[in-house]
Each structure stands twice: as C-alpha cells, then as structure tokens.
Length: 394
Image 1 (cartoon, rainbow, N blue to C red):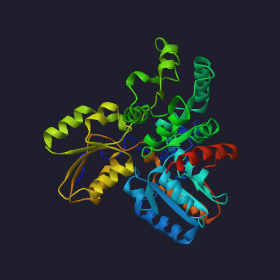
Image 2 (cartoon, one colour):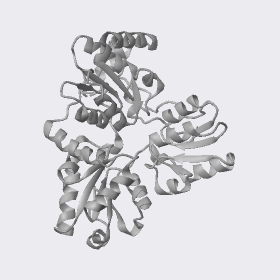
Image 3 (spheres, rainbow, N blue to C red):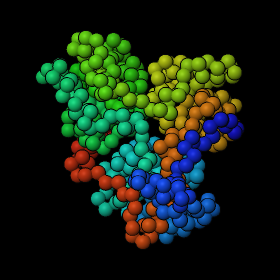
C-alpha cells in the first residue's frame, strides 16, 4: 500500500548548499561543513545515477557502500549492504578487499566502521553534516563531569558501570572501555544490562534515557530506583544524594527526536480505526508507548516480525518513516503504516543526498579521498575494548 503522509519528505527542503551564486555570495561569511561543488549540487537524478554506477563499476571490489535502514530509497538503491549501524560496521569489516567504505548513515556510524575496519581501509561519510541529535546530547566533557560528580557523591563504593548506546560518539565508547563499561545496541540492551549488574551496583546509561528506562523496567528495576541525569543542571533534583544512593540506574537526559513523536493517543486511534491491528514500536519510544504496544524491539526485530507475519496481517509501526515505507513496499500482502501520520524522515540521515555520493565516489577515481572519518588510535583501542565486551556476550 502507499503511505499517505502530510510529510512524505524531509522538512529540510534544502539539503544541498544554496544553488544561486547570488545567495551563495551573501553567505560567504559562514563556512558549511557540508560544502559540495556546485557542479554536483545542480546535477539531475539520471545523471547522478549514471555517474554513481560508472564509479562503482570502475572501483569494483575496492569499494563497499553501506546504507542504513533509515536512508531514503534514492540512497538505498546504491548500497551493497543495508542494515542497522552496528550490523553495517561488522559487514564492512568482513570485506578486507575493500579499500573504501562509503557509509550512507550518520557520523557515529562511520566512526564505528572506522574502529572495526582494517588499517588500510578508509571510511567515508558522504556528507559530514549528517549527525545524530541523540548522540549529540551526550559529549565527553559532560560525561566525564557526571562521572566525577557521581563518585564524589557516592564515594569509592559507588560501583558504577558505564553503558553507552551504539548511537554515541567514539570517545564515549572509549570512555566506557577505559572505565570497565560496555556498549549496547537496542537488540542486546537487556543482556548488556544483566552483564553490567554482575559487575557493579548501578549503571550509568547514556545517551538515550528511553531505551535505558525500557530496558531497566524489563529487567525488573523499580521506577524509584531510576534517576534522570540532566547534564545541563546536574544534581538539581531534590535530595540528590539520597536519590543517587538509592538508584540502580542513572539515565542520561537524551532522546531520539524521531521516536519522541509517537504517543499513546496514536496507538488508541490505530486500534479504533483498525480492530485487531498489531502495534509494533521501537524501544527508543517513551515508556508509556512501549507499554501500550503489542510488541517492541530494535530495527532488525521490527523487520523480522513483519517479514514473518502472515499475509493479510495489519501493522502500525512506530519508527522512522523511510523504513516503514520500505516495509510496506516489500510486503504488499500486509497492511503496514506509520503510527504517526505526519512523521518525517530522520532529518540528519536525510542529508546524505545522491549528489554527495557521486562527488565522493568520483573523487576516489582520482585517488582523492573526500570526507574521510578517522578515529585516533587511543580512542579506537578503548572503544574496541567496550565493543568486544559486548560481542563476548553473544
């Protein structure tokens, strides 16, 4: 079925630099990190397709293109692999013949690919402005300050195990590696939380409070033993020392803007409009949404549930619209729609435009590596430690 939406495309109507030379001149004082030659920005879709196909053929096995599930179809069609961020990084590491890994995702994903790739491989993010608002809600300076304040408050017996979601910067993964912590994905978060409590008394979970809260609730932790840490106003809550001493999980005040759009009222409307509908949501949604749903799980879980569902089944899905739209297209025997009728694509993921892909690929033909993502050696070492702890749980 066709997805009917008031927001079928991103609200960011200009994902490329301004095309008018006059307007460009007006903004010369500001530097854009997503700058691209005007030649590519003005190119039409057919020409971009032709150039990308030619570059891929010329580069052959030296190139692998990764496409995250949340990318639009115009990008996914170029991908050698599609998946979630960690799956893609792992797949890239299994292609040792590839000198170049072009990651059509966001910045933290490209960092993970660089961490897991071989030394000779170069990871490229076509548009460096493609970031993640959730990942940006926790930075290393704030996390280190939090760590110090928590230990000052709780003392040497604090027993805190840091856990960072895969959707975080490489230096936060490294922080966890260096401080006895671990990385988690939305798929393995329950297993990771179980591991963490076997190592210490409490967990510091960042950057997404909702994945942390939903996982902790599933694990059996009471709401009274969870506390939200606001990095902009730490220790501001009443009786902070007592609350922290009673806590088992400290949740960073972060969230995914896309998954925050879903609410219980949408679920109630879907059930009223379509009796017997299956409501399937992502664990980055708020707790009340997860509790009201029939099923919840990671992106890969959502795909698996729909693909194995019987023909004629009906699904209201709470996750990014490009993925929901693709699931509807690829499962025409089922009725599938996005729980939020006006939900928009992940705006930062949308910054990967075919023009950027053509630009970086044609640069590679001339041995010109554009927009390479590099993680320094020390961060890479400790991030691998945290990732390996996670992998050892499999």
